[in-house]
Image (cartoon, helix red, strand yellow):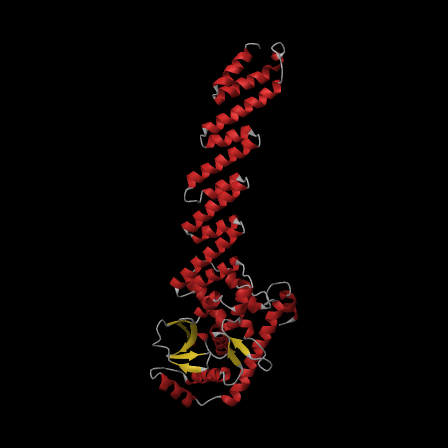
Length: 421
């Protein structure tokens, strides 16, 4: 990277142009975008550098805060060292094409393999073979643990991660779309031209008769990695639910397994909304609930948000939330009633009357006018009949409030006072 690029990317979250291309791509994805066009762009990024996709998404959407920019640069350097080490390995350890093809045909007679590609895949299997000691399977790992200097440390990763590294190294020689993803229950492998590739053990295998197995396009590895949130790092570090939701959204957009992706997306919406409600962030929860198009979630947020805002005397906000609740009309009435009662207790009777009028609460309105009557009565004090004319305005207001309250005793009392005016 040149000096100008170095200076330019020093002021961005990205390490270089490749990472920026990945970041811009994912930032622009939505559930309503053209899936065919998005996959075409993704395929280009896969061919360019799948490792960048995996590292950026782990950092941005899976809470791997240790993957700061300087650390990612170091890991990209390690990735280059792995590629160079693999090149050197191939010089002295490449098997003849006829032997490799014969071995594949013995396992899978119908496999239609290209000799050059078969030889390169065999070289990858030999390079990462556990017998060499350069790689070891490590359940539920992050990609960063796999990208180490092979001359100094053993590479450690799970099936997702080692498959991703295989794809990257293969892409340096051939089109990644020669490959497919073999999905098995709780496991991921590669597939090429009729033969399966077990990256964790370094061997060609036949998984065609495995129950629950499926073949998917190579880009499915991106969705798989996005949804892989079971590793030990996540068990000890909190991932922002908003980030997890976004990862699930992206996986949904890109995945060919829409049923699974839809289930995961629904679960992600539920998790993020519940997390936000636990923090009383109902405004954000409402945004997610609206986006989810799940009426049950929307109703729960609307109801809980309305109750929370009522308790904090934010009645306009409470009514905005209540509009989304299942028992909308009933909850809105409760909001007005709560507002009226709050103002009544605060002695703000005119405000209370306005609130009670919205729900035609005649009892509440009468009670407010009675309170206003007694407030005016206090102003009279111990005035006698001779000086009451000086308080004509107060008596008139008392008479008005008495009539509006409907209280006969108060009306009779003001009638008596009115005789002395």
